[in-house]
Amino acid sequence: MVVARSVAENDKPSTGEAAAAASDGDTTMQQTAAATGRTEMRPVKYHYADSFWCTYLVSVFAASIAETVTYPLDLTKTRLQIQGEAAATAVDAEGALKYRGMFATATGIIREEGALKLWQGITPALYRHLVYSGVRIVTYDALRKKLRNGKETFSLWQSALSGVGAGALAQWLASPADLVKVHVQMEGKRRAMGLEPRVHSAAHAFREIVSRGGVFGLWKGSVPNVQRAALVNLGDLTTYDTVKHFIMHKTGLPDCHVVHIMSSICAGLVAATMGTPADVVKTRIMNQPTDSSGRGLLYKGSIDCLQQTIGKEGFFALYKGFLPVWIRMAPWSLTFWLSFEQIRASLGASGY
Image 1: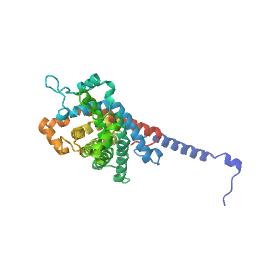
Image 2: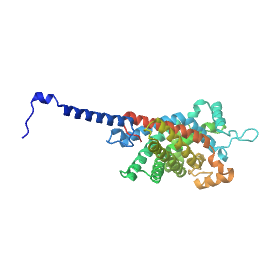
Image 3: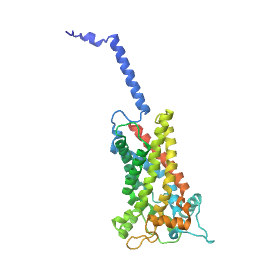
């Protein structure tokens, strides 16, 4: 038979009970400290910050920050990539190409068009990230969880497959905004060359593309665009995820800024190396003039553009603009991942 204690006895716990409570409190504090330090690879409990929509919105916000900071390098890269093709070659009085390198191109834009023109086309670029960045991050995370299937390990081929799939899907959905961005970016160069402008704003570019090629015209250049995005995300997402967890496992470092910086630098280099050739082809196809039916006048498709570029300008023309691509991708990746991880940490989410 169990004898009930008095109220007074209940208010005064025994020595053994006090020790047990203190032990439980210490354990709870250790668990809380570990969670706050974000040393665990994935959270033990579900948190709203790890939800689909929160991850989506955080990735869009982080991408918008990174895009705004590095956009002038993207504009410079686009101008460099079309340098050399028949439709966009600008020559000086001696018959030489007017712009050769990254620095000369950037200073030429500032001198002839104004410093603010370095951000020309930023609006459709931000619109693009409303779709692209959100879709690629949540898709990669979903594929990663599916392929991992509750296991702690995640092999390189699984990570590569997830990166390719996430990048391809995200870019296909975001291709219309990317096409509008390229058209707007090139208007400053056309006007500086004395040519009549084709579009006056992002909205005008959108209407012109649809009027010339219909709704499907918004996906002109989508094949090389998707190919590029698949390669870029194979380099970015796969490299970041793999390098980050490799460093954490081998060094014992927590999920901190040092790990994020090292991982994002590696991700930017690999992404630029793998994605630049497809980026050159994509930019040239998107920028080429079209007939009344929306068909390109210079290239029949991505393979034709690839063959013409190599045949007329050599293989290394495929890496034209590589330096600004890499210089942009490194700080873009760094800014994105630091912002993304920091925002998620402040919301109480796990490390990505």
